[in-house]
Length: 444
Image 1 (tube, helix red, strand yellow):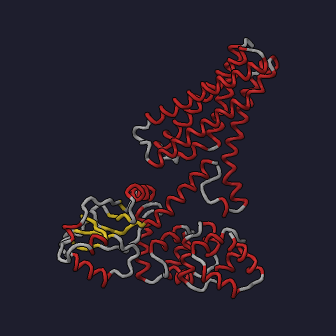
Image 2: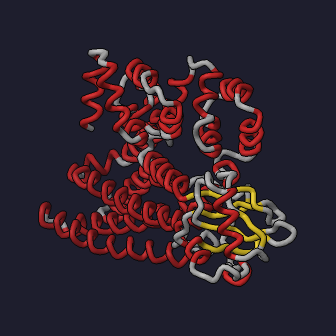
Image 3: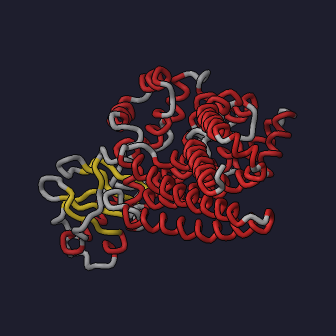
């Protein structure tokens, strides 16, 4: 980023005035992106030179936990409270949930009583639930008032609502019974009751609904917000589309890192030590699997001594199996995440992927078998290589499709099924299948 290079240069020169001019002209989201490119000292200096408390708060909401904790660890709780009072309560709850409990508790004591009560109500829900990310300000009116009266109430009482696009309609018991848009409200005669123009099929979630499920609903129905209710259908708040975008982005990032075996947090903002600790267990599994594959190969030392050229095809057989397994598991993980594959009846999609793996195994088995025969003029060797590739790719497709489904049923993130652990498992099966075929068909 050009702005990052400029700010780094100005920070080294302590050009405070020039930096503040850039800050005034830069969007908070762009400032937050700059932070991950700065050293801890530069981050602290840049943050201290942001004078507007509202801008400071907006930057804080966009930082990942590592950057956030580093910035606020030495900040006085009272100052932090003044900053957080300038941003929406759902964003405050998001910031607090990413801080250590002792720091969050000290900040809570400094917040104004009204804000403290609202924030504690939000924090009682899990940070990954719809209740934990909802906005407590929303528009809800009785179903029997007219459109004209509703417009008057909006103008008088709801000027500061963050997401004024939907007006939620409640009955005499304050239970959610409908929703209408502002467009509907202003295009009907003023005397029309809300119950005559509202949509009764309201998409809503409970306070304990997982935030990812809420995000899927917003995405599926192309909503700008979704209401959050308690068990009695009383509205507690709304989850807005800007929070949904954050959820989807974080979920994609987490899945990508898990699939690569690099942890689940933002790698670019972790220290070298934390990055090493995050990757160590996954690579340890890969190392252990590689040693096991080595032991399997060692069991067939006699076969390798008799036909040394058997070793030439081990890399390609392991590679083809690992690649098809990774492809299959990635497709299934994505299907489960987007609900194109149902967890309750995934077998049609699983069978389809296994069939594709078998067909690819037949094709590449024939291709590599012909290569082996052409290179060494041994039809049995070509047959061994072809069978080994077919078996390896078929088993890899089976493993790559079944493990994500099994993990999802066990309530474990299926994204880990595409990591080094599964790839190494597939490599072991590939080596084993290759040497079983070789000893059986080559009489060694």
